[in-house]
Image: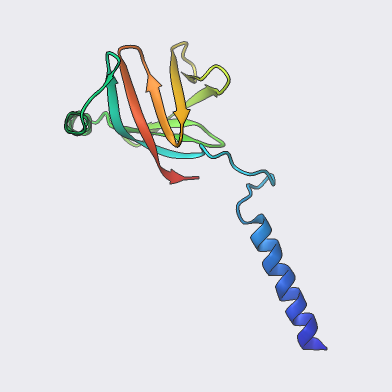
Length: 131
């Protein structure tokens, strides 16, 4: 009888852990866009640059200390040189605004790719770490 009870308790624990494994603390599923994104490409004057050119631009950004990542989650922020810059996201209007700023950037999110447009230049990101 003890073995049956022990087995039943272990079975129930396994089901509970499996059912709750991908939920956030509030019990809600995390949105698919939660995660950290890294630069993969650029759009200049409406045209996406070649992979070689994108590599050169990324290398130059890294050299200048201007390479950054973007994280969406319970907190949204851009990380540059180890410093986090928190921003607000309006998913309906598809805009990003840095906290304390009035500058607004447009973005588009499709199929795990994020494109942030600041006017003449757009930066394309892909998720590298889901949250």
